[in-house]
Length: 157
Image (tube, rainbow, N blue to C red; front, side):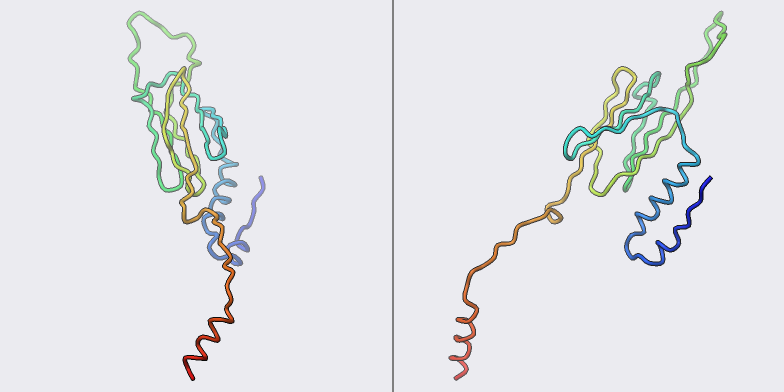
């Protein structure tokens, strides 16, 4: 097991608290990795992403998706199933346990929708950068600043 000391990073940077906490969280998640349910993260376009989570056996009512601040929390709670009369389960290999998966989102990434089909939960994400943060071209004016200075000196006389 490796441990990393990130305190020099905290001491020598300003405004990168969120990035440092993400690194801390990723390193601690490495030790407590969770494998149920399996998932894929896909890039479907320039600014579009999809999380596909294997949710076989879960209905729409048993799944919930919550978007908070900079993360998406997907959870599933299986309803307790009463054993059928006269049926004895010899082997239980299909998992019917509850789960909770958390995914950290980058700035300006929003959840746009979710679908459940064939036991797969698809969560659609899109990055929407505000106009104020998009790069813009600045026009360079061609004018004679000298003329403005001459005008000011004539008025002073």
